[in-house]
Structure formats: C-alpha cells, structure tokens
Image 1 (spheres, rainbow, N blue to C red):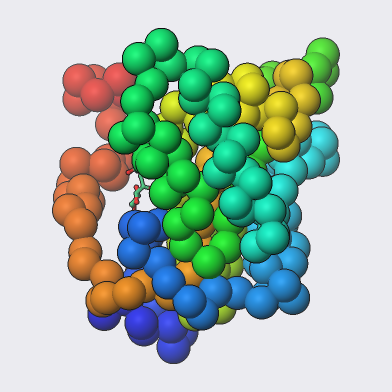
Image 2: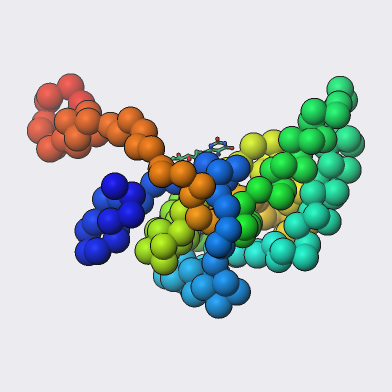
Length: 198
Ligand SMILES: Cc1cc2nc3c(=O)[nH]c(=O)nc-3n(C[C@H](O)[C@H](O)[C@H](O)COP(=O)(O)O)c2cc1C
C-alpha cells in the first residue's frame, strides 16, 4: 500500500513514516539527499525569512555524533546508566541517513516567532514527502536530544531549536498503517452558533 507512488495524489495519500530503527540500506545518495533538501526548502514562510536549516550528519560523522550524544547525556542526566548510553548510541546510528532540521527564527522581526516555527515544522514535513517521493521512508523524531541546548550546539547556535531529527532509508519490512482521524472529526464547515466556535 505504501509503495503506490504512481500519481501525485497517491504519493500524498500513501506517505507514512518508517520507524527509524527499522530503516535500512539503501539510503539516499549524497545527490538524492541534497535534492530532498532542495525540495524541502520550497516551504511556505511568511516574510521570505527561510527560518530553518538542514544539517546532514554524514556517514563518517555518525559515530562521532553518537559519542557526543553520550557525553551530553552523562552531563545532563543524573542517573544516566549503561542502558541510556546504549539508547543514545542506537539513536545516533539508526537508519542510513540523518538530517537535523533547525528552527532558526529571525528575532526580533515583525513576523511572529510562532509563524516562523510553524514554517520549520512544515519544512520537516516537506522533507518526509520528498523522501517518500524518491522511494524512501523517513521518520521524524525529537526526544530529549531535541530539547538539549548542548545537542543543539552541535548543529546550531543559541536562538535556534532542533525541530526534528529526520532519519531516511528503506523500510526493512512493509510499513503498517496507523490509525488516522475520521474526516468528520477534523473537518467542519463554519456555521455560526453550532458550538464549535462559530
Ligand atoms: C514534532 C514531532 C516529533 C516526534 N517525535 C517522536 C519521537 O521522539 N519518538 C517517536 O517515536 N515518535 C515521534 N514522532 C512521531 C513519529 O514521527 C511518527 O512516526 C509519525 O507521527 C507517524 O505519522 P505518519 O505515519 O503520518 O508519518 C514525532 C512526530 C512529530 C511531528
């Protein structure tokens, strides 16, 4: 089901995430990764501020990232044990490709930070769509590392935030669908006085 990429609409309808730990080779080539990011950069943003950045963690740097993550975890987690360290290593090493998306709002600016952050989320989503369109699956994770200033400093600077770690590769097994909201629960037509805020 999640392989139907035959039409633009089927691409949109069939995209779903792969669990990063279940993503295996082949991953995108260097050129494919850059193309995905170029596509993801075509994201709406109020004011043409481009308030996001994509940082690719190259293959040769993945192990170094794992060690850096472990060091930060030891500093930040009081009761950090071997399992935590193993989890941090697995996090950094999973899936063939890793792109860190940074929200990089322009502050102060008349465009509210909220809008700039929304755009960063949309950029992550666009990257997932591009990966799917190119025959791969992506998975968007955050977790403690996304909220650590020390981890942020590995990729960016003060004022920036990690919007997501997007892992990209080929699903090891067929992707399963997950529950989706009922259209009637999420879509309404504005009708004054119906109790939904109209
Ligand atoms: C901002 C954001 C952060 C997420 N962080 C995590 C995470 O840390 N761990 C996790 O298991 N899933 C996380 N998810 C959920 C996964 O990305 C999940 O695979 C996704 O919601 C599945 O939706 P899809 O099938 O439509 O792609 C996150 C989702 C978003 C939007």
